[in-house]
Amino acid sequence: MEQARFTRQIKLVGKDGQRKLQEATVMIAGIGGLGGTAAIYLAAAGIGRLILAHEGEIALPDLNRQILMDSSRVGEQRMETAIGQLQRLNPDVCIEGYPLRIAYETARPWVESADIVIDARYDFPERYVLNSLCVDCRKPMVESAMYGFELSLTTVVPGETPCLTCIYPHQSSEWEPLGFPVLGATSGMAGCLAAMEAIKYITGIGEPFLGVMYRMNTLNLQSYSFGLQRDPNCSCCGTL
Image (cartoon, rainbow, N blue to C red; front, side, top):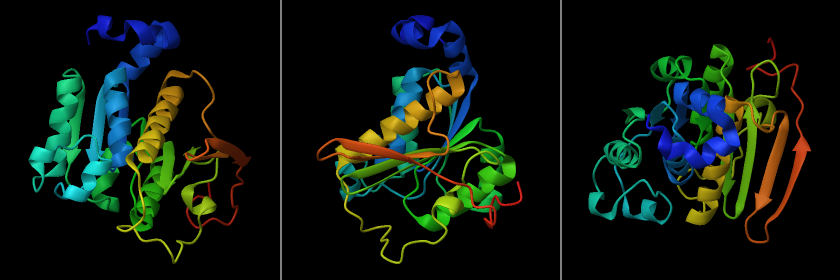
């Protein structure tokens, strides 16, 4: 990659940190308002390879938050549009895009080839599958989510930190995967935090949120964090 592009951030991550970014592979499950924003900033930062997964076509209600999408492409495949936008931003990033949901056997090769995974899916069944894959493949996973004006963030390192099943052993009966309220600025903030968490983990700068849950209310910018504990009887990671 052309190093002049990264002159300003090399002052922060150093040449070695930039090299680590350019040698890294990040998988992002979901490229909507959260995952799409994370993909943009990782591509801009010079990540060497992105693996993206998200099914379906662009719909008009997506456009309040999914900034990788385009009004002129409504009704067309979401993944094709996303890849085009990212390649225009940074043509040196290798991008693999799969217009598919997260299923264990299908997604396993993607997780295995990634250095870190970002979970940006909106529905718990897929999030649990991705969590199981990361635990089985011993891959770190940035767990970022939002609902309304609230966002949350933690990073799962299998065998070291609680996994998603430890944190949320049961899916909420009130969760509506296709009907939850969302403002683009909030999902974008969550996506930026997810990208930053991946960058910290890859380069070794700063401290990722390992075993800690970070939460923020974007209406008043109040935030707090609290420790998380592994469940020794967890059905997913309890034997690690």
